Length: 90
Image (cartoon, rainbow, N blue to C red; front, side, top):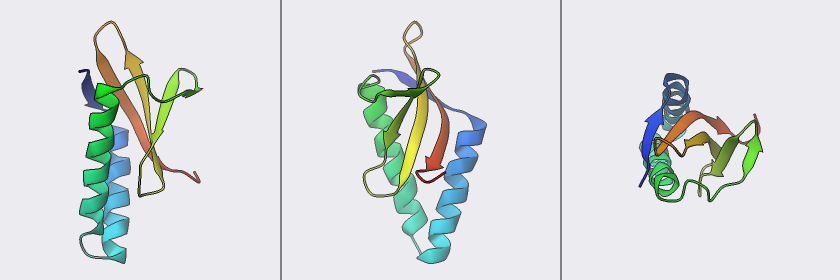
């Protein structure tokens, strides 16, 4: 299994989205964060399962929420680098 690094801007993306969902419904932000964690675990096990979208960056769509995890794969160091978690319409 690959290691994962979530860059600070991606962490901010996650925090902002969770805050937005919690304003809509109590506890929904927590569900969003759990789904992001599940997707990161999937990516760590299957780093090449998603197609390259741009400049070597792969994207994986969350199952319930309309967000995509943007990441690169460092094969040499067996590391996944998550650069963004963005709403699919952005």
